[in-house]
Length: 456
Image (tube, rainbow, N blue to C red):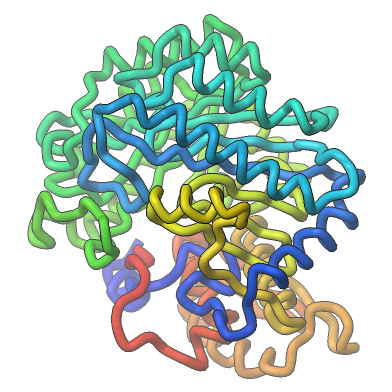
C-alpha cells in the first residue's frame, strides 16, 4: 500500500459499531421511557422470528492493561463478584417486566473487563439466573472472552455445560517488550494451554485477539506473533489496529508516550504482513480486521450474506434487539440505542430504586435508519445500493455523498455505479473513511477535538 494513500486517509474516524456513533447521539430527544418503547416495539416484531441478543459486561480485572479502552474496575477483592451478579440479574428482571412473553435468546456474550475474574460457580449463577426466564433459540450461540492467564479448566467446563461453544482469548502480542509496555504479560505456553483445553472440552470455535500498532512493536514482533498463532490455528481471529484514545476518562493508555507507537505507515505494513501470513494457512478476511477459517461460523455467515456488525463487533447472525446488561453496556433496539451508567456505585443505586440504569441514548429518525443500513452494508459486505424512487435507501443528501466519494474512486478505493457503490480490494483497508462520507451527522458537525482513533 502506498505511503501517499496512508498519509492521505489516516485521519480520526469511527469504527462504526453503530450509527449514529456515540458522540453524535441526540440526548435532547432521548428518555428512558422512549428507549423502553423502542425496545418493546422491536421485541414484538422480532422475538419469535429471530430471538434477541444479550451482552453482559463484567468489568473487574486484577491488573490494568495499558492498551485497553474498555470500562473496567481494577481490584483483587473477589468479594465484589456476588453483589455484581445480583445487580445484573435485577437489571435483567426489570427488562423482563416490559415483555409479554419469554425472550428467545439467540446470542449471549460475556465481555469485560475480565469475565474469567469471576469464579466458575458465580458465572454459573449468573447464566442460570438469565436462562431461568428465557427460551433458547434453535441455533443459539454463547461466547465469552477469556484471559489466558486465569481461564481454568473449571471455567471452560462450567461454561461449556451451560451452552457456551465459543471462546475468545486476548493475545495482543507475544513479544516480552511489547507485553511489558501494555502491562499484559502472558507466555505463549499459557495461550497454548487455554486453547488446547477449550478444544479438548469441546468448544467449536476458539478465537484469538491480536493487535498491531502497539508501543515498541515492530515487524519482527508481528511476524513472531502470527507464526506462533499459526501453530495453534484458532478458528477465528480479530487482528485489529490499536486504538490510541488516551483522552478518554479512566483509560489506562498512559504507560507509554506517543513517540513509542509505530508510524501509520509501519502499522499498515504490520497489517499487510500479518494478513499475508494468515492467508498462507487458509484464513479468510471477514469484513474489517477479522479473519476466519472456512469451518468457522463467521466465514459461513459471510458466504451466506448474513454477516452482521453491532457493539460486540462482527457476529455470525443478526438480531433486531440486543440488550446490554451491566455497567457501561450499550443496548440496541434498532430504533434506538441506550447506554448504562459507567460507575458501579451509580449502577447499584439506580437498580435499588427499580430503575433500568440508563444514562444516555439516541432515538433514530428515518434518516438515521437509512444511513445506518448503508454503513452496515459497507462494513459487512463492502457494497451498498439504493433506488431513486424514494423508498429504497435513498436519502436527500445522496448526491453530495457521492461527490465526497469521487476522489476515493479516482484513488481506486471504490467504484460508483448508477445505483450502488462497491469497495475495491485496494479500498477495503479504508472502509472506515468510505463510511464517513455517508455519516451525515459527522459531515454536518465536524468535531472540535479528537473523538475517534485514527483510521489506519
